[in-house]
Image 1: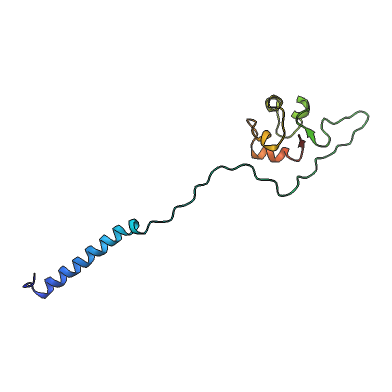
Image 2: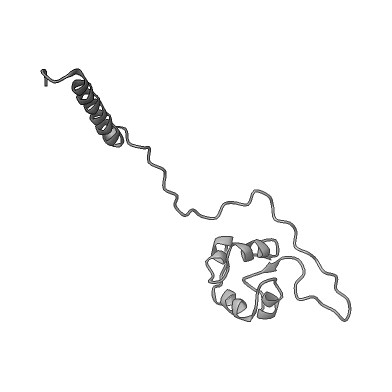
Length: 128
């Protein structure tokens, strides 16, 4: 190599530098690993920030008595009263009756078919 012309020595030096750069580029992730991202796990229901709005109170007349007036107690409500709630049909009312007693919103959330949307609709209308 020492007796090679200057152009070949320059080419050999350039190839050596490029090989070192490629090796450094390949080893960089092993020497300086990327930070790990945190894993997100399922958490419980957050506590409501605002108190739920008051349940509607319907007037009663001599001939008309509403099924629901004020907050409905889920532990004592009849099937007809449960079906009067928004999003509750006969099958869901039967599941709600079968899953009694209720003490918290988490108990209500555990019933099959009750999701976040229905839970949001029922929160201001029911009590335990």
